[in-house]
Image (cartoon, one colour):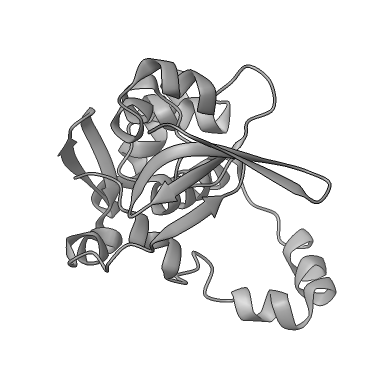
Length: 178
């Protein structure tokens, strides 16, 4: 299973009450704050949301993303039990939410001709070097996208990252790799 660009086009919120947040964000926020959640359950919900957006992914990627230790990441995935299914990806063993399996098995929609993905976009923000190598096989180009400083945006053409872009005031600069 390889990450697909077509997930950028669907609206599939993790929280079915998302419309309520949009309609009355202050009331929804107040309600949320008043509902205490145990730390263990919060970690499980964080793992669910991570897998929904970034999955398939492994415990290492989750641990990096969530800033939790390796043992906590493994425990969270273990405790999700039947909610997750193991999958084999080009980057190795991983997990995904069982409820997301039908969507990932659907035929991909045609990719957009071109997209300017913002810095840190979920499509290319991955936690491990193996995952990044799937999106940008050339190590030199990976260094241009995932810099030690402020990350540029990614230029996506027909589903493939082919460059970077930056904006300064009203000027957009695009750096093509081919």
